[in-house]
Every structure is written in C-alpha cells, then in structure tokens.
Image 1 (cartoon, rainbow over the protein chains, first blue to last red):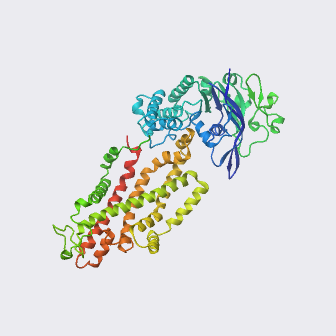
Image 2: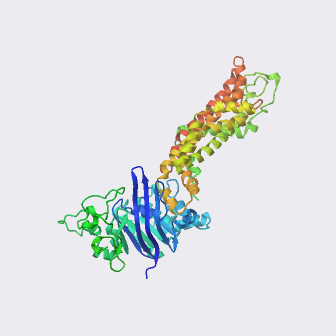
Image 3: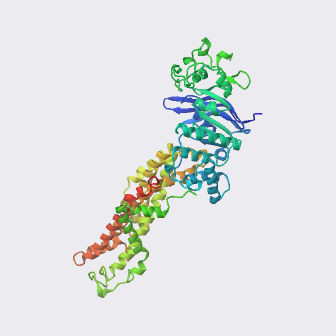
Length: 322
Length: 282
C-alpha cells in the first residue's frame, strides 16, 4: 500500500569550517511514502534542517553533500545537473521555512511572490500567474484574497505571512512539501491553524509532507511515520503510533519522558543528562552512549547499525541485537 | 509581474518631504529648460551678433550677451541639455557597471568577490579628472571622451553600496525560498535582489549625477571637454572668466546654474530613500 516517493540513502552532508569538519548529517537513511506525513524529530542542531536542505540540494559553501543517494521517483537527485534540479524545486519538492518574517521579499507584494513559482515552472502569462496567485491566497484561507495579494509582507501578521509562504510553496502543487519547523515563530493558536491548514492541503492534494520539528506534540497530532535524529544520525524510524506506544531507542524514550502529560503537576519533567556532543568530534561508537542510562560495554566501541525491529520499524541500538 | 511602488504614490509622499520636494522642483525646472530649449531660446546658441557684444542683462537679452554677441540665455538653456544629458549618461553607465559587479560580488562571494573588490579599490583610487586628462591627451578633447573617462572611474560607488546591500540580503531566507521554488542565480540577482537595491541606487545616483555634471563642467572650463561653440556651462564660464571685470554676468550666471543644479539633485536625494522604502508605505 505504501509506495515510496523519496528514499534518502546514506546521506552525508559535511561543513568544512576552520575549526574542523562538522558532520551535520552523517549517513542518514529513510523513506518518505506517497500521501503520508513523515516527521523528522530531534533536538536543535541534530541535523534535521540540513537534511531537508540537502534534499533540496540547497547546501552552500562551506557545506557540501559528500555522499549518499536521494532517490525521488526513481531518479537520483544528487546525480542530475543543476538546471534539472531547479525544475524539481518548487514544482516537485517545495519547502516552507521556519521564519515567515524573513522568508518573504520585502519589496514585492505577496501576490507577486506567489505568482513567481508558477511563472518559473509553467508557461503562464503574467495575468494568469496573478490569478493563480489570488486563487492560492484564498486556498490558504486568507480573507479578501484580491486585496491581500496586493499587500506587502510587512503589513501582514506572522500567521498571515506564514500562510503566504505556504501559498507560495504549494502554488505549483508539489508532490512533496518539506515543512521545516513551520510554526516555531508563531504563537500556539496560529500554530494550530497553520497545522490544520497544512493537513487539509495535504489531504486534498494527496501530497506527501515531511515535517521537521522538535515538537513531539505536533508529531503525535499530525505524523504518520517518524524518524528520530540524534547528532547527525537516525536512531529510530517507525510509525508514530508505535513510537509513542513503545519507544525503543533510549534517546527516544528520554525525549518522550521530557514531555509534560496532561495537567499532572507533581511529576517533575525528566531531562536527558548531558548535552549534545560536538559534531566536529562525535563520541566513538554509539553517539548517544555518553548520555545513555542503559549504556553497555560495547556501546563505546562499535556504532550500532540501523536494524529492523518488527514490522516497518528500525532502530539503531545495541540493546536490540544490532 | 513584480512592481515597485506606483509613481503616484511616490510623488504624493515626496510632497511630505519639503527639502526633497524643493530638490525635485529644481530638477524638474532644469529638465523643462533642457527639453524645451528650442522654445525658450530666443536665438540659436551659436548665433553671433557683433554689434550687441557684452550687453548686460535686459528685457531683450535676459542674461545679457557675451563677447561675440551671443544671447547668454539661449546658451544657458541649451547648456542645460548638455549638463543633464552628460549627468544622466554618466550615471547610467556607472550604475550599470557598478551595480552588476556589486551584486555579483555580494552574491557569489569568495574569489569573485575578492577580484571585484580589488578592482573596485584600484579604480576608486583613480582621480576621474586625471584619467579624463589622459584620455583627452590621447584622442583629443570632446564631451564623449570626458563622459567615458568619468564613467569609467566613478562606478565603484555603486559597486560598494550594492555589494554591502546584497551581502545583507543574501542570507535572508527569502533568497533561500527563491532557490527553493527553482529560481536560477541570474533570476535571483535580477528579480529578487536588484529591486531591493533600487532605493539605494537612486540615492547614490542623486550624488553621482551632480558630481558628473561638476566634473564635466570643470573639464570643459579647462578646455578639455565641450569645444566651442558648444554651450556647455563650464565652457561658458571659462569664456566669461576672461571678461570678469567688464561683464561679470557671463561667468556668474552659468556658475549659479551649475550650483543650483547640483544642489537640486542633492536635495532630492536627501529624502528619496525614506520615500521609496516600502516599509513606510501602507
């Protein structure tokens, strides 16, 4: 039933800084299926955003995609020339950024900006592109679309700007929408609205969505499947339900314990001891080992591979016979 | 299509900035003089009349006549054409070279930036008048030579300002977003970054334009630019300098026009940035 849309295989993206090589993404593999919401979860700095930017091939100096394959509909995105990749960006795979305040061009009206992608990808006249922009402004549920399309970004609220950004990114009806923490900079009520909107668009268009977040609440609410990342590596992949019911990797368990549950006040939230290791010089063996309460002898020596654990479930931990 | 602020909007806002508005009036006034020169001028700018030499300003000869009996008013009016034309042409060439290099420098960074910046620094260090003198010595005097010489030495102002502006914009997420919808580098530079630079470019233009006029008039004054009987203000001033004691108006009037024109552009530039900023507009 699940057909893979995008398969990320052993993706490695390094940044060459004067202080050393930052292995931001170091051998990440996962599959995003057609018509699903795939979540990429992890702490700040674990390589989630770099993974998504790598999928778009938007990594610039001093960063470099060092290896792996990005198989999208049977085509390796890392092997095609840049101008072919440009035709994929926006039209096949689009991306919503974290900060709607900074993601819009201050000197153009949002209608112009939404019209830009269709103008680039389809053979449209300016008038048609403008009409399409208005259509998408109304699709993201902004009131009075014809007037809103003529607004400059600075007169819009954060939620409105994020809606404009969404309209801009879905205006070519992509098959995969990458949403990189789309709601971190808006408040909670808007967050709920934006997420509902995204889900609705996803359902209507049968598009896949890759949601990048550190918010487990969002994952539980929206996700079909999820991958948990730690320090440039995927530590666990599975359906969201399974991960919530029975987290396998100690890191996932730790993350879930950090979440507040209901109105319980007495229980103190747990924290994972220690801090994220330096990505320049990651620990030997399992990268989570120094912070892991269940660490064993072998953990320091050997890096655990990602192995299947039950149906459609992968985990990288020595506890599970890796 | 992306469009910038409507013209009507800009003009309305200009009214609120008094000094800029005064500047605009001066610039428009000079422009009207230049465009309508054949209408305003009573006589041809090269028409001599030996009988009426060195007449002081009067109702018939508004600005008097010069040593060859030419009507000074007509010459000044035609001179406005030259001043504006030279100013615009020089600024246009400068902005063209400077902005393209500046955007590339800021956008690509790295070795491209280093090369362009080095070239900019080198040219910046070169005085326009000296280069103009060199060009004139090689291929003879003339306005064209002067225009080329000034344009080729003054573009770094545009490069500097565009580079700085682009550097501050290029890491903004809207540029990343543009890439994410599949825009090419040249499209991003031309359609996303350039429009953001327009206010700065216009403001710099209001500084380089009068500078270009001043340089040309200076070179014409020295005899390297416009050749007789071309009524360049600098050339008229030079003619008048010889008769300063007998007919002081000949030198004074073009001088005043040069000052007023330069002042007009500078005043206009003063508030232009504020006026063109879309953030101050609803």
